[in-house]
Image (cartoon, rainbow, N blue to C red; front, side):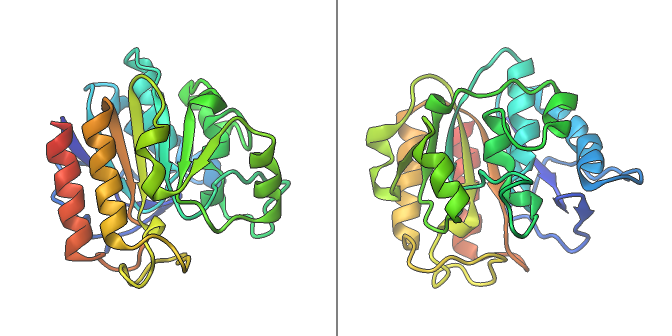
Amino acid sequence: MTVLCVPFHLDEPLPGFVPPVTPDEVIAPDLPPGTPWERMAVLYAEVADAVGEDELQVVLSGDCTTALAVVAGQQRAGISPSIVWFDAHGDVQTAATSTSGYLGGFPLRQLVGGADRLVPDRLGLRPVPESDVLLVGARDLDPPEVEFLAGSAIRQVAVDAVVDALPDGPVHLHLDADVVDPRDLPGLLFPSPDGPRWPEVLGAVRAVLATCPVVAVTVGCTWSGSGTPEFAALVREIAESAR
């Protein structure tokens, strides 16, 4: 098991990115000119190749789209993981539904077969069945996301209810830092108030690690700065639990 660091926010390198734990490997290639999706396809091809070399990976990056590469790498290794996605946001936008156009709002929709397909297709990513996806702690949803989720087999639960709703089989655990109430984690890029406090999130993540076979972990370090010592401690705990 290794800890990988991908110091990018989408296709933009983050030279000042401070990972919450010391990684075993940093993946930071020079990206060619092109659209953001084309550039991310090059970046994520390297990430997927690294993930495919080992059954267990903890991957730290500046946003959530890196999960596309990690799931693709797991699939190449013969694992078809279910997804447990901790996030204050739905991440189920498409180019047609997003008013901001922010690509970091697309990855969960891409994982289940929707939204822009350039990166998933280049990675050979197979869609994850919606029924194998659990969205945890989402509370900042745009109307199109509410509509999509209402007709989707993706299940939504509060952080304190995650254990009773866990999917079967191997699990890809994704943790976006902004699932935590911003009172407990300052500096978030997209803070969402009225969320679960730090002890609730900590307890829920621990419960997932203790209850089901977690085969990969992605952590979206979605803050400006270096987060908090408490979050760094949680990432260290995740890494040790995954070992």
